[in-house]
Image (cartoon, rainbow, N blue to C red; front, top):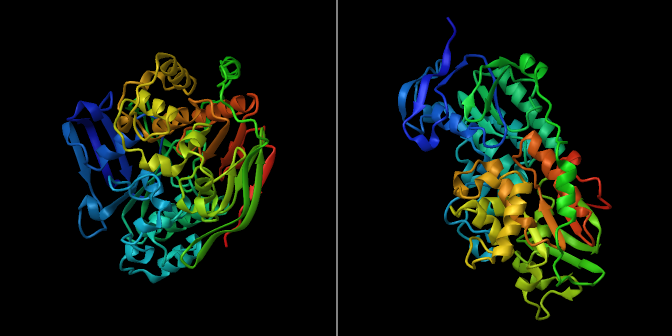
Length: 483
């Protein structure tokens, strides 16, 4: 008789706010490696949290059998890396610019302290080589890039040798070579131990070869478990086509602001260097972005991409010691940073991590009008119309009154993207904008970016590890190397 490692029968959560629309019936059988797949907001995270016992049941039964493990405690046998762990542990003490402020880093633990005692030396060596952990050991955890944080979280969790490892979108934030190496390592781990892997995936067509079964989730309902082959054979088309020309025209026809700068140079960096302790992140960088150019920034994890963007947005205190000009105005010559920020739309992993305001989503979007974390100034009716327009364009109009922290991570990302667009910025800065989005929404957002780039004199700077995410309008590239 097959061993059901995790099984839920007729499960209905007691709390209606976290309840799926029909009772949950599913089992993770010994030897299976499962992908829980569904679009943004479909209920994947609710399912996983229910399976882990986070939500007590009103009806049904939840059972575990972790043998050959010596105990049957969920905490000891199941490890879960959730979406927000991509950016480190988000808590109330973290704030948006904290990563760049040296005076707030003194009490932060180093990577080596966070890893703790390591028992499996062979696995340790494999993981340290795969993720290049050695150079990170003495770094403060707060100084890691989002990709480095992802590597650290994966290493720390895999070293605990769990019976079941659940990972939410494990490949986002990793450069291409590391993604390939991680897939190989996970496949290797499934062959050499009793470890079973559960992946929670938003990209419906990205199912690694070591996955044996797929559990589809949609519209807050859990479907029947399929073999990987059955799922891929019946994969529905996710092409975005219907209505996209109308969306493009709506974006192109939006009114323009009347306070645009007219300087030819939007961004100019002259011999810019950034150091943290002994480590040089950027070294003598010269870079000029001219009006209307569309830039892609590439580079492996930890090469300084997000640090570079933090200089442009003045979120990094070192920007005032560097020769940086924005819209023809040199940083530190008396310009108001808030006046500059009015012309920049920005979204990043750091911003997503810091956004812990549980306001109605429309207020989160509207906060982009004044570059605040939260809404402290009531927008005019015509400004709220613009906010509603962008929420509609991103497909989240029906979420405008829902509290932000009750959205799925993908829905949160769409809201933060709408926030970046609401003021029709002259300079649009997108750092890994498609993180956590499902196949449909990735295509939708890419087309929205392409349409926005067709507006007059718009300048784009975009960071991504996926070449296919870049809009067709890219005109220039900057490649950063690790120092």
